[in-house]
Each structure stands twice: as structure tokens, then as C-alpha cells.
Image (cartoon, rainbow over all chains, first blue to last red; front, side):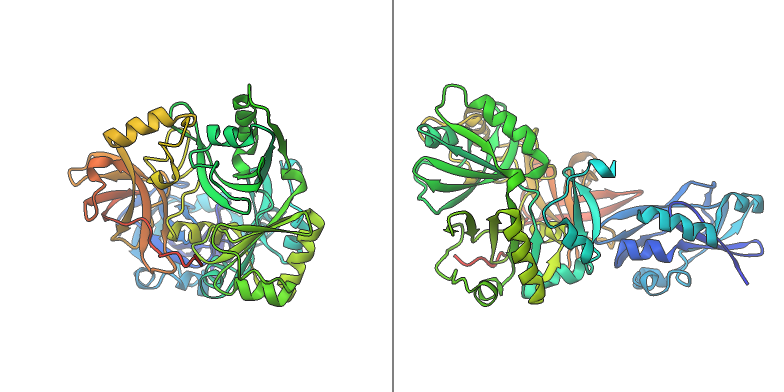
Length: 125
Length: 363
């Protein structure tokens, strides 16, 4: 089973060995409403952990996207360009960027599934 | 933080409807109930119900009431008939905008001013400061007054079915007083036909319950903003501000520069109108899937900054990205080609009319 980790800003990273898939959580997708646009970086772009790598927009607002770990982009999910609502349908499948994780020890500083669910519970109140 | 936030009389109703709440003008307000798009479409196609109890209501009466209202208001109050509503602004000596507001003529010597919640305290202080030497009584009724807005093409029919009220004789921007203490006006902030109802909080809650029980879609502040934006209506803080005059905002038709005695700021505004404002509010159509939002830079084709976005949305009714922007007047003519900086990218933009959606008022 893939390991999945989250940032407090609601980005997830699904980990398969050295590869990571970065997107936004189900909770965040629901909060945003219908996604109208994903502003994604390009193949080969590199980001530090915590650095802004793009933005996601709904009719309501635009939210910056932050890199959970230091990484290099190997693929951008082009399906989202034509149909950004895929994120609403299944946020965990509709990843935004595929990356190479530079330093796997950075994952230790992120929330796992259980910690993230508790975090969202607290955010509601 | 949360405990300090004010609640409208309908707060418990919003909780019961599981609304998503946000802080707005010091109030804990619903931004949406069933999704912005659903609520927006309900108002455009049938009807929607808004809690706007946060709005400020200021009562002005007395021997000098007419003269005083005309002293602080850009529109012309003296010729108003009882039962009439006028839209306009209050401006500073500089011509900058204190607030935009509705003025209701309650009687020969009495008015109700309906102001933005976010400006209420500032407005009250301003009005009191300006009242020196005028024989007027100024009262803030905001805390005792609830307000609903029923908006959309079916609103007249719904008023009849749900409340037995025949409001067909009310024309746009007129009102009636029912039972001595309830105001129903044919006004709104959506570009659709509709009514705004002012009453004591208990009655407002009863009416809200009747309307939602009948199946009217409750609507949050989210679609209130997208609806007013499509209709080209300004929001204080975006299109109007202390440093944006009504002339710059293209609201000259609500500024009566030649009324007897003028009003606070009228000299500056008259000069601005005569010489031509150096900045103007325009509409922009943006050729990009990304949305230009408040504060984003507007540039000419050479890359020089010539203004900023005041409001922008991916318009549900029009299906494209549009915005309002304050730009250097040289770039205001229709069809002018500009650019908007959306994060790291520049998007092409064209100046269009800012009334993106033609309002469907019942005149």
C-alpha cells in the first residue's frame, strides 16, 4: 500500500519508492468547491520543502500550493488542464504533479493519514 | 477570536442548515449552504434567500433632515417622495468615498440610510461629525433590525404565495411599510428582480423559516458577490474606497453635482468630472483559464503597470474569466488591449463594458 502524508495547508504526497504524487486532500477539495483552474509548474522545475509550486482556483478563491518535500517535477497531470473538476471527483487519484523525492527523511516531518484527519476535525471547530 | 464575532438573528438557522461560515464585517456569516454555483443559478433562474441582517440601518429625522441628507449624500434627496429609495454615496471633502448606501424616504422629515456593515461605525461617526449645526436626530437601528433579501425572477410570486402579500404595485426602488414597522422594498444587489425586507429580528426569523420551508434556496455571501459582480454593481472596498471617487468608479449618474448647495466633496468631484478622471473603472475579458483577482496588476502591452483588478471571477452566467479593474483613463476605451499578471504569467485582456450581465429589474 502507498504511504500518504499531508501538510497543514492540505496538500498530500503519495509515496511510491522515490516517486511522489502531489495533490490536494479530499477535505480541501470539498472546501474549495468546483475547481476551475490548476496553475501547475513545468517538468524539471525544482522546489524546496514548503515552497510554493502553483495554485488551485475555484470560483470562490485561489489557493497557493506548497511542496510537502524538496522535489523535482517529472510529470504534470495534463488531464487537469482540460477538466480541472477531476479533482472534485477523486482528489487522491487526480494528482497535480509527479515528482522525485530528494530527501525521504523530510517525510517524517509530515502528518500521516490519522494525524491529518484529527487536524481537519480541529480545523472545523 | 470566534467568541468576539457578532451573530445575526438568523445564526441558529445557518447552523441548522449546516452553512459554511466565514467572518465578515465582524459577523459570523454564511458564505454558502449548498455550493456557490447552485445558489447563484437559483437567483438567476428562480429565487434565492439571503440573510443580510448585518447591514447597517441609520435613521435620520428632524426639521433639517432633508437639507442634512443632501449635505452628505451624492444623489438628490429633496425631490424624493415618501416610499421612494435612492442609491448614492457619501464622499469626503477629497471626493473619496465614505460608503455607498440606499436612502429610504420614510416621511417629509425622516429617512432611513442603509449602509455597509463593514463601514457602520465609521459612517455613524462621519454622519454625527457632519451634523453640527443641523437640527436632526440620528439613530443607529442596526442592532434591532433584521434584513432578508429575496432575489430572482420568481420573487413577486413567492411574496404572494408564502405571505399573501401583493407587491405587484411596487416598482423598482420603491417601498411600502407594513404593520407600521416592516419595510418591503423592490431593491437588491444581484441584478435580478427582488425584494429586501426590514423588520424586527423575531419577525425576520419567522419569514426566513416560512420561505425555506416553502423550498426557497438559502444563499450565502459567496454568490451575493458573484451575482453583484456580473451585474456590474460595485462593492465598497473593491470598486469604491476612501481613495476611489464615485466619478472614477463610473457612478456619475448617482452624483448630482448641480443640486442646490452641493454636498460634501462636490467641488472636487465637479472638477474631476469637468477635467476627466485620470483613472477609470473598466470591465475586462481575460483570455486565460486562470482568474484575475482583487489586487492583481493590470499592464499595458509594453509591460508597464496601468492599474489593478478590483474584482474578478470565472463567471458562471457567461462561462469565462472577467474582471473589473481601475486603470489609467488612457486605457479605458472599449476594445483596448491590456494584460493582467496572474501569479507568474501574463494573460491577455480586453476592455469591455463592465455590466457583464444585463440586470433584469422590473421598472
